[in-house]
Image 1 (cartoon, rainbow, N blue to C red):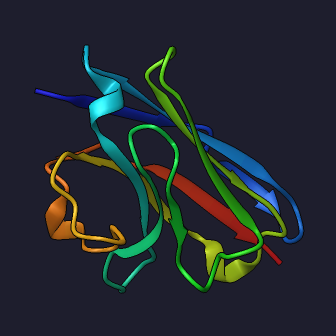
Image 2: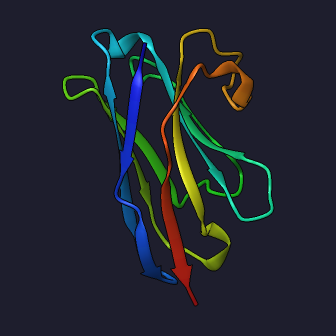
Length: 125
């Protein structure tokens, strides 16, 4: 069983930045591909970014490419999402997810077995 706990969300002005963290309680963290998804009010949960266990392969949704950076520290069992140049369209609950059998490039939410509870990001204009 994998438990994921996100943190780092909050209220930020447009143009600002945040760093989200997701801590995993699992002994073999490096075996898991990790991803971030987000869900805005009234919308479906959408893919944001994914990173393989070694960190060697990373993939972003087109809507965040160039503004968001996913990274991981396997020694700390933590994955991060640095989000810059925030706009109101980025307002959502951000979820981290973990899985071991991921179909490339990792944007299918059904591939992920474990999910955190989410952290709210609200961007004011």
